[in-house]
Length: 160
Image (cartoon, rainbow, N blue to C red):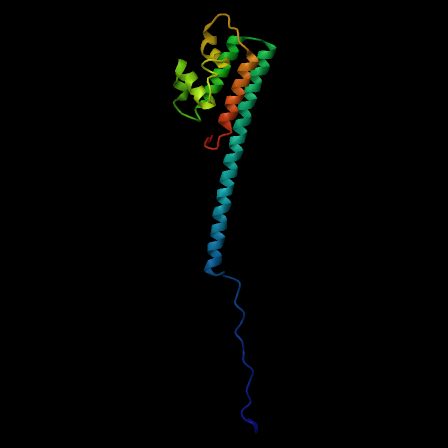
């Protein structure tokens, strides 16, 4: 003690808060980030699978066109295109591949928006396989098929 009063010491501040463990808000933010990251990964995985499947479908159509160019067989072309369309149509409606005759062509027309299958170049996929000699416009049929596939495969509500 001195003449002016007791000897006081300076105020001691508490230690700085530790960075670990984080506050609950940071835990929630980290959880939200992980959930968003998982959702983005799933979306990307689905998107890549869809793109891979699209590429395989277009490659199959290209293979059919190349095969027809090297060995023209109208009956075989109409059968292979019909099979390809039936496989892809399962994405739109699981019962679509079981449709027969005019109902099948009507389904294809309704998807494309027109009457090119029931009254145009696409009619050959219904009649061609059963005729001994089939005459068809292969380029028109392949173009029609490519347009139908493009319309179906580019839709946002289709998931492989």
